[in-house]
Length: 205
Image (tube, rainbow, N blue to C red; front, side):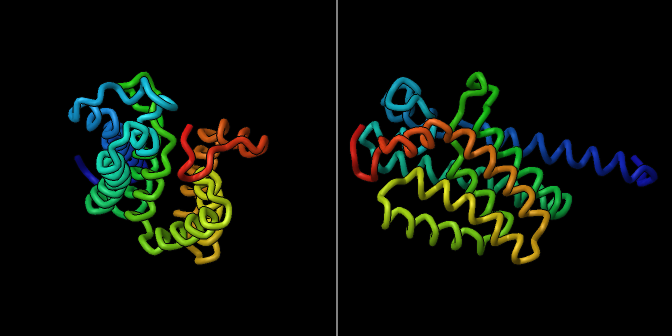
């Protein structure tokens, strides 16, 4: 292959980055870990979600923590790998598709998690300092309101604004898209928040 057609190469690189990101992101660690631990199908308990929050409903905190870390690091791995191969923009594409892969894994009928851990993992790979911003906002909101979903929603809203203020426009654009998708995936949580019925941290059910 020659370097004569830059637009085609750019398109091919974007596709390869997207495929790598999606495949990494679509690994359902929550489902895999709970089955390996003999806890059955995590999709049949609680919210039916494959993420760490629902894994925690099995009563296994270590398994939930492992799910959280793996769901985050699969996005980080996608960003780092694609960036090493093709540059920063390819890393952003890979991270974005890792996020989509987690939310819509083809192996599970496109029914995945809500993506908060993978969102954080994307930040870690793209702009590690922003993880501190996310964490600070999340912790602050969680301390005040004791509601995990609200803390996550506010944190994801703040991240693109801070990135934009920093002049990191490309990352801000990608994170804005991810924030919008995350909010859509949290639509039921938002309805409960508006109704005042959303569960608080430490509250069962």
